Length: 274
Image (cartoon, rainbow, N blue to C red):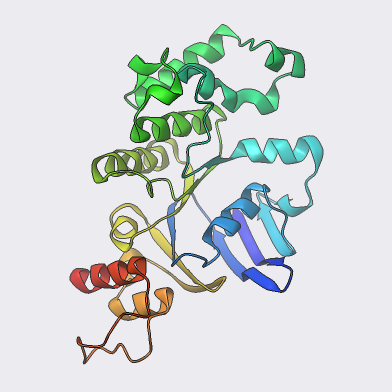
Protein backbone atom coordinates (compact mmCIF):
# COMPACT_ATOMS: atom_id res chain seq x y z
CA UNK A 1 0.00 0.00 0.00
CA UNK A 2 2.48 2.66 1.23
CA UNK A 3 6.23 2.11 1.09
CA UNK A 4 8.83 4.60 2.32
CA UNK A 5 12.40 3.81 1.30
CA UNK A 6 15.47 5.71 2.59
CA UNK A 7 13.51 8.97 2.71
CA UNK A 8 15.85 11.84 3.49
CA UNK A 9 15.57 15.60 3.86
CA UNK A 10 18.53 17.91 4.31
CA UNK A 11 18.61 21.65 4.94
CA UNK A 12 22.12 22.76 4.13
CA UNK A 13 24.40 20.75 6.40
CA UNK A 14 21.55 19.67 8.65
CA UNK A 15 19.71 16.40 8.10
CA UNK A 16 16.13 16.63 9.36
CA UNK A 17 15.06 13.16 8.17
CA UNK A 18 17.74 10.54 7.71
CA UNK A 19 17.09 7.49 5.50
CA UNK A 20 13.69 6.61 6.98
CA UNK A 21 12.13 3.39 5.71
CA UNK A 22 8.87 1.65 6.63
CA UNK A 23 5.91 -0.03 4.95
CA UNK A 24 2.18 0.19 5.65
CA UNK A 25 0.62 -2.92 4.14
CA UNK A 26 -3.00 -2.30 5.21
CA UNK A 27 -5.01 0.56 6.73
CA UNK A 28 -3.71 1.31 10.22
CA UNK A 29 -3.63 3.94 12.95
CA UNK A 30 0.03 4.86 13.29
CA UNK A 31 1.57 7.20 15.83
CA UNK A 32 4.94 8.85 15.30
CA UNK A 33 6.60 9.95 18.52
CA UNK A 34 9.85 11.63 19.50
CA UNK A 35 11.21 14.76 21.09
CA UNK A 36 11.08 18.17 19.40
CA UNK A 37 13.36 18.29 16.36
CA UNK A 38 13.26 14.54 15.76
CA UNK A 39 12.01 15.04 12.18
CA UNK A 40 8.38 14.02 12.68
CA UNK A 41 6.78 17.06 11.02
CA UNK A 42 9.25 17.09 8.14
CA UNK A 43 8.48 13.43 7.48
CA UNK A 44 4.73 14.09 7.24
CA UNK A 45 5.27 17.12 5.01
CA UNK A 46 7.33 14.98 2.63
CA UNK A 47 4.63 12.30 2.57
CA UNK A 48 2.07 14.94 1.58
CA UNK A 49 4.56 16.55 -0.87
CA UNK A 50 4.38 19.92 0.89
CA UNK A 51 8.15 19.47 1.17
CA UNK A 52 10.24 17.73 -1.48
CA UNK A 53 12.53 14.91 -0.37
CA UNK A 54 16.26 15.31 -0.84
CA UNK A 55 16.59 11.59 -1.47
CA UNK A 56 14.61 8.38 -1.16
CA UNK A 57 11.29 7.10 -2.41
CA UNK A 58 7.61 7.26 -1.49
CA UNK A 59 5.41 4.69 -3.24
CA UNK A 60 1.65 4.30 -2.89
CA UNK A 61 -0.23 1.54 -4.66
CA UNK A 62 2.59 1.22 -7.18
CA UNK A 63 2.91 4.98 -7.88
CA UNK A 64 6.14 6.88 -7.32
CA UNK A 65 4.77 9.77 -5.24
CA UNK A 66 8.12 11.55 -5.10
CA UNK A 67 8.07 12.00 -8.90
CA UNK A 68 4.58 13.52 -9.14
CA UNK A 69 4.20 17.07 -10.49
CA UNK A 70 1.39 19.45 -11.42
CA UNK A 71 -2.14 18.02 -11.41
CA UNK A 72 -0.95 14.54 -10.39
CA UNK A 73 0.79 16.00 -7.35
CA UNK A 74 -2.38 17.90 -6.39
CA UNK A 75 -4.40 14.70 -6.76
CA UNK A 76 -2.00 12.96 -4.40
CA UNK A 77 -2.40 15.79 -1.88
CA UNK A 78 -6.15 15.15 -1.99
CA UNK A 79 -5.59 11.42 -1.48
CA UNK A 80 -3.20 12.18 1.39
CA UNK A 81 -4.97 14.85 3.46
CA UNK A 82 -3.10 16.93 6.04
CA UNK A 83 -4.33 18.16 9.43
CA UNK A 84 -2.17 20.75 11.18
CA UNK A 85 -1.58 21.68 14.81
CA UNK A 86 -2.74 25.27 14.19
CA UNK A 87 -5.84 24.20 12.22
CA UNK A 88 -5.08 26.36 9.10
CA UNK A 89 -8.68 27.56 8.78
CA UNK A 90 -9.83 30.86 7.27
CA UNK A 91 -10.89 32.62 10.52
CA UNK A 92 -13.48 35.05 9.08
CA UNK A 93 -15.09 32.43 6.85
CA UNK A 94 -18.00 30.30 8.04
CA UNK A 95 -17.39 26.73 9.12
CA UNK A 96 -19.10 24.98 6.20
CA UNK A 97 -17.10 27.05 3.67
CA UNK A 98 -13.90 26.05 5.43
CA UNK A 99 -14.92 22.41 5.10
CA UNK A 100 -15.75 22.89 1.43
CA UNK A 101 -12.19 24.10 0.86
CA UNK A 102 -11.32 20.41 0.96
CA UNK A 103 -12.63 20.23 -2.62
CA UNK A 104 -10.42 23.03 -4.02
CA UNK A 105 -8.01 20.67 -5.78
CA UNK A 106 -10.79 19.34 -7.99
CA UNK A 107 -12.63 22.60 -8.71
CA UNK A 108 -12.11 25.17 -11.44
CA UNK A 109 -10.37 28.47 -10.73
CA UNK A 110 -13.55 30.38 -11.62
CA UNK A 111 -15.70 28.39 -9.19
CA UNK A 112 -13.10 28.93 -6.49
CA UNK A 113 -12.97 32.69 -7.07
CA UNK A 114 -16.74 33.08 -6.74
CA UNK A 115 -17.10 30.57 -3.91
CA UNK A 116 -19.50 28.41 -5.93
CA UNK A 117 -20.18 24.89 -4.64
CA UNK A 118 -22.59 22.19 -5.86
CA UNK A 119 -25.49 21.48 -3.51
CA UNK A 120 -24.29 17.90 -3.20
CA UNK A 121 -20.95 19.11 -1.80
CA UNK A 122 -22.68 21.45 0.66
CA UNK A 123 -24.90 18.62 1.94
CA UNK A 124 -21.91 16.32 2.23
CA UNK A 125 -19.94 18.94 4.19
CA UNK A 126 -22.82 19.30 6.66
CA UNK A 127 -23.11 15.52 6.97
CA UNK A 128 -19.41 15.31 7.83
CA UNK A 129 -19.77 18.08 10.42
CA UNK A 130 -22.73 16.19 11.88
CA UNK A 131 -20.66 13.03 12.09
CA UNK A 132 -18.06 14.97 14.10
CA UNK A 133 -20.71 16.49 16.35
CA UNK A 134 -20.39 20.11 15.26
CA UNK A 135 -23.06 20.56 12.55
CA UNK A 136 -24.79 23.22 14.66
CA UNK A 137 -21.77 25.46 14.12
CA UNK A 138 -21.87 25.25 10.30
CA UNK A 139 -22.97 28.88 9.80
CA UNK A 140 -20.61 30.38 12.39
CA UNK A 141 -17.30 32.01 11.61
CA UNK A 142 -14.41 29.68 12.30
CA UNK A 143 -12.78 32.27 14.57
CA UNK A 144 -15.73 32.02 17.00
CA UNK A 145 -15.07 28.35 17.80
CA UNK A 146 -12.97 26.77 20.52
CA UNK A 147 -9.66 25.15 19.66
CA UNK A 148 -11.14 21.67 19.82
CA UNK A 149 -14.01 22.66 17.57
CA UNK A 150 -11.64 24.27 15.07
CA UNK A 151 -9.54 21.11 14.94
CA UNK A 152 -12.66 19.05 14.22
CA UNK A 153 -13.52 21.48 11.41
CA UNK A 154 -10.01 20.85 10.06
CA UNK A 155 -10.68 17.10 10.25
CA UNK A 156 -13.98 17.62 8.40
CA UNK A 157 -12.14 19.57 5.69
CA UNK A 158 -9.69 16.67 5.32
CA UNK A 159 -12.56 14.16 5.07
CA UNK A 160 -14.17 16.34 2.38
CA UNK A 161 -11.23 15.33 0.20
CA UNK A 162 -12.21 11.65 0.63
CA UNK A 163 -8.57 10.76 1.27
CA UNK A 164 -7.02 7.34 1.44
CA UNK A 165 -4.49 8.54 4.03
CA UNK A 166 -4.95 11.16 6.75
CA UNK A 167 -1.81 12.81 8.12
CA UNK A 168 -2.14 14.69 11.42
CA UNK A 169 0.78 16.86 12.54
CA UNK A 170 0.56 17.25 16.34
CA UNK A 171 -3.25 17.49 16.13
CA UNK A 172 -3.79 17.79 19.90
CA UNK A 173 -0.65 19.62 21.04
CA UNK A 174 -2.50 22.92 21.59
CA UNK A 175 -5.70 21.43 23.05
CA UNK A 176 -6.90 20.84 26.60
CA UNK A 177 -7.26 17.19 27.71
CA UNK A 178 -11.01 16.96 27.04
CA UNK A 179 -10.78 18.32 23.49
CA UNK A 180 -7.65 16.29 22.86
CA UNK A 181 -9.61 13.13 23.68
CA UNK A 182 -12.48 14.14 21.38
CA UNK A 183 -10.10 14.77 18.47
CA UNK A 184 -8.22 11.51 19.00
CA UNK A 185 -11.52 9.62 19.28
CA UNK A 186 -12.53 11.13 15.92
CA UNK A 187 -9.26 10.13 14.26
CA UNK A 188 -9.58 6.60 15.61
CA UNK A 189 -13.16 6.30 14.31
CA UNK A 190 -12.07 7.58 10.90
CA UNK A 191 -9.57 4.74 10.76
CA UNK A 192 -11.89 2.04 12.08
CA UNK A 193 -15.14 2.98 10.35
CA UNK A 194 -13.76 4.26 7.04
CA UNK A 195 -10.80 1.94 6.64
CA UNK A 196 -8.42 4.87 6.17
CA UNK A 197 -4.80 4.93 7.23
CA UNK A 198 -4.17 7.63 9.83
CA UNK A 199 -0.59 8.70 10.58
CA UNK A 200 -0.32 11.15 13.47
CA UNK A 201 2.62 12.88 15.09
CA UNK A 202 1.86 12.65 18.79
CA UNK A 203 3.15 14.51 21.80
CA UNK A 204 2.87 11.84 24.46
CA UNK A 205 3.43 8.13 24.83
CA UNK A 206 0.14 7.51 26.61
CA UNK A 207 -1.80 8.89 23.62
CA UNK A 208 0.12 6.60 21.27
CA UNK A 209 -0.51 3.63 23.55
CA UNK A 210 -4.24 4.30 23.79
CA UNK A 211 -5.12 5.03 20.17
CA UNK A 212 -2.55 3.50 17.84
CA UNK A 213 -2.06 0.04 16.38
CA UNK A 214 1.56 0.79 15.58
CA UNK A 215 4.08 3.29 16.91
CA UNK A 216 7.17 4.64 15.15
CA UNK A 217 9.77 6.38 17.29
CA UNK A 218 12.18 8.91 15.80
CA UNK A 219 15.41 10.39 17.14
CA UNK A 220 17.71 12.77 15.23
CA UNK A 221 15.81 12.10 12.01
CA UNK A 222 16.09 8.33 12.18
CA UNK A 223 13.59 5.60 13.07
CA UNK A 224 14.77 4.01 16.33
CA UNK A 225 11.59 2.05 17.11
CA UNK A 226 8.80 0.50 15.06
CA UNK A 227 6.41 -1.75 16.90
CA UNK A 228 3.20 -2.17 18.86
CA UNK A 229 2.13 0.00 21.82
CA UNK A 230 2.74 -2.98 24.11
CA UNK A 231 6.40 -2.93 23.10
CA UNK A 232 6.86 0.67 24.31
CA UNK A 233 8.85 -0.21 27.41
CA UNK A 234 10.79 2.26 29.55
CA UNK A 235 13.99 1.20 27.83
CA UNK A 236 12.48 1.85 24.41
CA UNK A 237 11.29 5.27 25.61
CA UNK A 238 14.88 6.11 26.56
CA UNK A 239 16.01 5.19 23.06
CA UNK A 240 13.32 7.31 21.43
CA UNK A 241 13.71 10.36 23.63
CA UNK A 242 17.48 10.27 23.88
CA UNK A 243 17.73 9.97 27.65
CA UNK A 244 21.18 10.08 29.20
CA UNK A 245 22.81 6.65 29.12
CA UNK A 246 23.33 6.89 32.91
CA UNK A 247 19.55 6.72 33.41
CA UNK A 248 19.38 3.02 34.21
CA UNK A 249 16.80 0.48 35.29
CA UNK A 250 18.55 0.15 38.66
CA UNK A 251 18.61 3.83 39.51
CA UNK A 252 15.70 6.18 39.99
CA UNK A 253 17.77 9.01 41.44
CA UNK A 254 19.61 9.96 38.26
CA UNK A 255 19.04 13.58 37.29
CA UNK A 256 16.95 14.24 34.17
CA UNK A 257 17.97 17.89 33.96
CA UNK A 258 19.56 17.35 30.57
CA UNK A 259 16.27 16.13 29.12
CA UNK A 260 13.51 18.55 28.16
CA UNK A 261 10.17 18.46 30.00
CA UNK A 262 8.41 16.66 27.14
CA UNK A 263 10.99 13.90 27.32
CA UNK A 264 10.72 13.62 31.10
CA UNK A 265 6.94 13.35 30.87
CA UNK A 266 7.24 10.66 28.21
CA UNK A 267 9.67 8.62 30.29
CA UNK A 268 7.53 8.87 33.41
CA UNK A 269 4.49 7.79 31.37
CA UNK A 270 6.41 4.79 30.08
CA UNK A 271 7.46 3.81 33.61
CA UNK A 272 3.87 4.09 34.85
CA UNK A 273 2.62 1.84 32.07
CA UNK A 274 5.05 -1.03 32.58
